[in-house]
Image 1 (cartoon, rainbow, N blue to C red):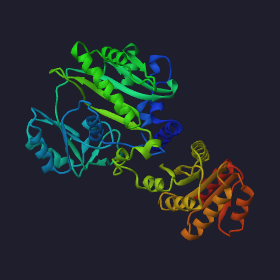
Image 2 (tube, one colour):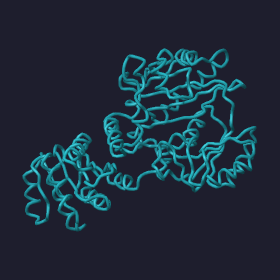
Image 3 (cartoon, rainbow, N blue to C red):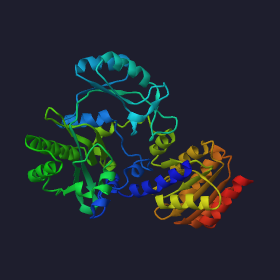
Length: 444
């Protein structure tokens, strides 16, 4: 079951890697019902590790741009959390475990504590709860089965919400620029709102040159249901959010809920910000906040060598170049009765050292009982791949069967290198032949 779900998610995410993440999640058709694509599938796991920020980090960015958020502190010990609660001097305090997964409120800690989000009026209780959160694993519907270790908690002022709305700014290719999406029905899955009551979804395209206009911000605030002085206040928050969107090179800023308090404040209570990874070179401060503690160590190691790695549940490693080829390779292995253990994508412009490092990663996986190399050389020189393979086989003393299918640029030279190496490498004529030989190798 996990294998199937991982591969289903992989298909969606492969498409995402060919566009921007926000474009995939963004507006797709002219009908309201198709305004948002399935967010869960598009953010589950990706061959390209997009920047992920913890909730408090997103709120810090908003705070720095003048966006109204709850007062908050961050703590990594129970005593710090208790002290933070005292400093807030609030009527009520909300304590939130900080992990990169949704469903925290309904999650369970291996300490026995239920729920990663708690409300209290007593700073001492904050400290007691933090003791049962920090250093323990929190399991939610979006985490691995063993959960994710909580290293940080956010201690924030709890504000009453009299009304919840939804607001987002998305970079959408269908409109060649940013689009605002809003609904007076916030605090819930926006896809559900779009499906059941599409008339409650409003969108505004923004001219990337002219920028967000005053009348657009006011119109969106009105569509969100803000009235009187709150309409002006909401419009101001919308403009500040757009300024943040541009400043940090975001592909998405999503606020759910953008709430209204009984005291007459418009506050951003929760946020999700996605970033354009191509802008990393000019967003050093933002990308320095990237929380790697929840990342798969193998994926992180692969990224150091500009390799893209996805772990699966089988026993045949897939060494490919290109997203489409990866999916085809996984499918045909499955067709012949095998199960992919992972796939590792070389991409283009590959060097011999990358091939060597790729084999190190694949051979270190105890699940791997065979390796299938499937390279279609366009901009990739097959001879470079062949040299990298032979070097890796010799130096790493590869113990598992290796099946290689090469096609394209300089393939004849590559095949000569492999055949004259004297190494136990099984050559394949095509992908079908390669998959059959890899499956047969693990059954011997």
